[in-house]
Image 1 (cartoon, rainbow, N blue to C red):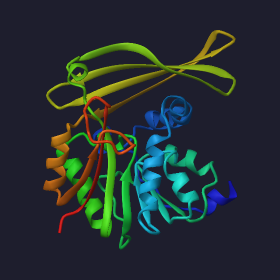
Image 2 (cartoon, rainbow, N blue to C red; image 1 turned 180 degrees about the vertical axis):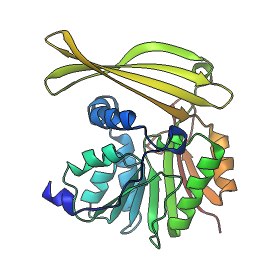
Image 3 (cartoon, one colour; image 1 turned 30 degrees about the horizontal axis):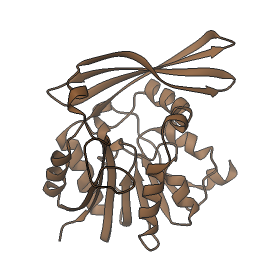
Length: 276
C-alpha cells in the first residue's frame, strides 16, 4: 500500500449523472467491489494482451488509458516499464487499483473521459479497453472524448479502443429477463451475478441491471445491485464518427488477434491516428 500511496493521483470532483460517464455513489461502490471477481472469470486476457502489444510498439510510450477501472489492462503495461497514466471517472475503481500497489511511475487521474485535460501531456498510445467508450451515451459526448484524445496524442500517436459488435437480432429485443451470467467466490461466499437489460431502440442505449447474490453454505446472506447505461454503435457509424473527429482509421479488427472485422465475432476493435 505504501507504493500505491506514492502514485500521483488527481483529486476527484463530485460524481455526475450517468450520461456524462460519471457514477452515482451506490453504483460506483458496487461496481468496484465486484468488478475483478466478475471479469476474472468471464473475460479472457486477449484484450489485455492486445493493448499491451500495441503499447510495446510505441517505442517507449507514454501510454494513457481512458476508463482504466481497477487496472486489469493497464497494470501489465506499467509492469513492462512504460510510463503510463490511468484515467477513470470512478473514485472507487481507482481506490481498488491503489490497493494493488501500482509503481510510482503510474499516474492516476479521476475525470470523465469526455472532459479531461492533462495539460501539456502527450501520449504515443491512448486506448480505452473493454467497451468503456460505450458509456458515452450521446454523439456530443463521443466527439468530446475524441477531441480530448486528439489534443493529447503525440505526433504519429495512435488511438485504440473496442466496443461490442451489436448483433441485430439481440439488440432488437427490448427487454431481456434476468439471467445468471457469472459465478465466482469472494470473501467466503459463493457469488452469482444476474443480469437484466432494457433497450431504447431509438437512442441505441441499453440500461443494464446487475444483481450480485451472495450465498454462504447455500443460504443467501446478502445482495448488491447496480444499474448503468451503455450505447451500442455499429462499425461504420464508428468510422464516420472518427473521421468527423479528425482521425484516420488504420484498422478495424473483429477480434484481439487482429483478424479482419467479421461481425460474427462480437467485437469491433479500432486503431486510428490523427489525420494529417
